[in-house]
Length: 93
Image 1: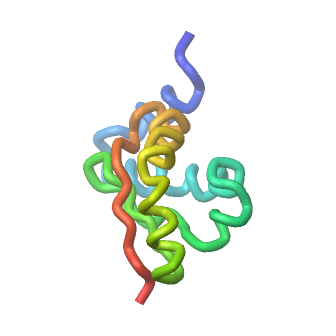
Image 2: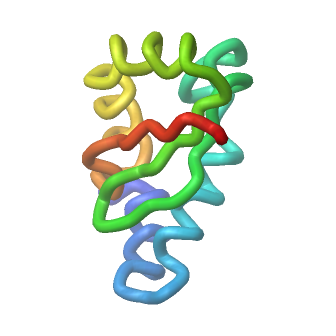
């Protein structure tokens, strides 16, 4: 049986709102996916061609996130049914 999230993601796939919808879903689940501490220093911004752009609040946390990037990508890939394949970290300016 296909998961509800995969079905819902498929409804928006190919539409102009698809990326924004995936990001909105991730925002709601962000603390649960990453943990409260990590979720408090970064947030999902945009999804473009399966790359999730994540805003990071400071350079120390950016380095910490880089060190766990593969684990983070695996979690996000699983949580989105493959909609997110990679992450791009962006330092907040």
